[in-house]
Length: 274
Image 1 (cartoon, rainbow, N blue to C red):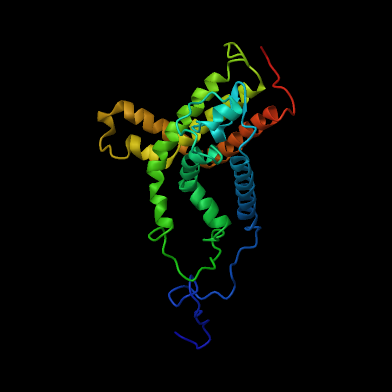
Image 2 (image 1 turned 30 degrees about the vertical axis):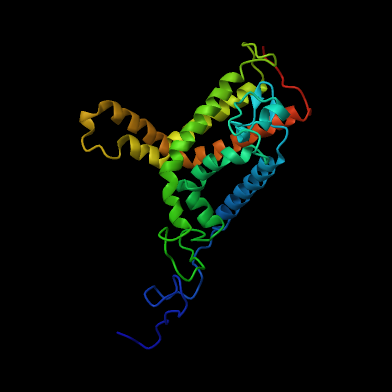
């Protein structure tokens, strides 16, 4: 029975509409719910600033036998003429800006459209919503049905590009077992960093939700496809750690690039184990 004292729904937009429960407080949480989105925003912003600096720096990205993952494959002719890098010059001499701009769009596009990273920056930067049980400030919600968010559906295609990039980085890791004279049998600290990085890159790429669907999403009878079922099971176990792998691979690729930068800039020499 109405008593005449019930709280009236807010006339604002977003979650504060007449169709939602009328709660006067912005939220009822008493914990530090803001800490997770704040840390996420700080981590992502740090990587964006660092990668932007390194991508446009156009220098100190090769120190034999290591080439920075930000610049690989280095496709501009100026890679060889200016930096004596090992990669093929497919773009010729007309490409005048940083060679990293050619290739970084593919791994960055894969990460930007990744299901986990969507959740991370939606909450951290767009506050949509900032945390569970905390109202978002937006007056309307359209999901990923309009520009620019409809472009998130390109994730499955960026996945194939990410496989190619991971293959190139694997090749670079193999080359990291050569010395400065390109003779096999070298192992330095950089070699170990490259091994760690490529392992995390592959784990993150294969744990992708799109990869899991490609392997087993359309199978109706797993018993008829035992090999694909085993692969699907392996990827599913990786997928359970997708968030951890996303952050670990983000840190490792930046660390590998920074290590090459230190070597190329002459900060120190690569410690060799044999």
